[in-house]
Image (cartoon, rainbow, N blue to C red):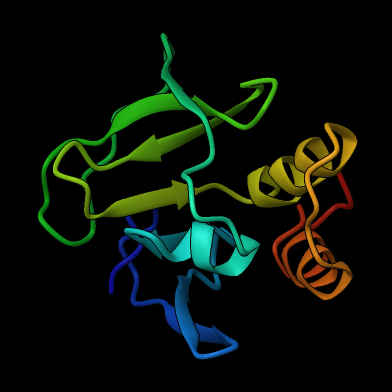
Length: 128
């Protein structure tokens, strides 16, 4: 898969049989449809709501349609990209770590090993 930002081929990171696509350049990560819920151990999707943003709309790395901007998480404070056809979700560097913190703060029962994986592996390079 090519990164929707850098347009370079990414690499696969596997967790418990779930393959996530990550960009070595920008540290963004792609979740195919349903993968976020699988990793979090949730049967229902994480809450999303449409967002207004000045960020450039990126193309879905699967179907190439322009993705929508949404706020995700209990507080809807994390801005991500989502494919309008449901191909998946794109998290920029640090956004997945921020979502993990938000879920934990709001009392979601996210397993410690999942928090470590998502919050550590996909945290912003400068520690934010």
